[in-house]
Image (cartoon, rainbow, N blue to C red; front, side):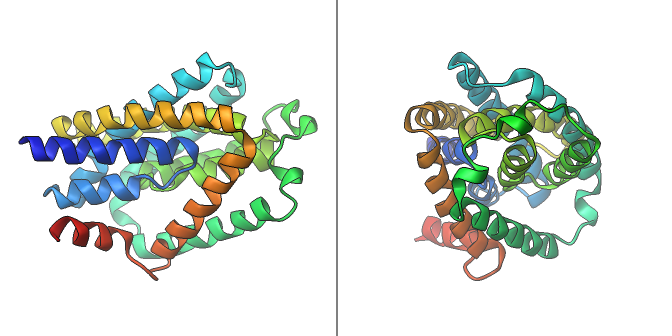
Length: 262
């Protein structure tokens, strides 16, 4: 691996760690970079999980240190999500990715409505929901989210945030802390599937992961310092950008590759 490749992976990792910690969708960048550097799509998908694992572990540690992580609720929601990720990882090659991405874009746009319309009702915490025990519907919801995470992981943060905020009542800052915890466990399980299927490049994944550490630390601190409003508008911007990508209006991957070739 030459120094140019190292620099590309680390810089990409910083952006991915920042975006994924605040919201989600950063894997569009990391997958694009990995494929741009010559990895086959399946290997890029598996290799990306190494960086995600490092990034989520860093973000969880930072949120926990800042005392905004509701550990018990996070672990309870992580269990069905982790189980679902096994299913998603195994069926990844059998799903029509284009159809799935279009559906994902629609879900993100629906979430955008909730964020912009009376946000105080959904995004600033609802104690009556936070104090409730985990129910069957939440278990099913996070199991399904886990399937998606095991499949491709791109944008899983949006699904997790929607599920945590709307079903569990946490504000966006605490929801982000819970989100990265769930994403960590989902990634651990999915990574094992890719590892035993020999679909990872360990060196590329570790170097990319080193970059995500810096991005995750910066983002987690900004989330706590800036508060709900800051996170809200970051998510709005990212939802619009990645919805345009997933709906096929503008191909972000193609733009990234074109920039790299210019």
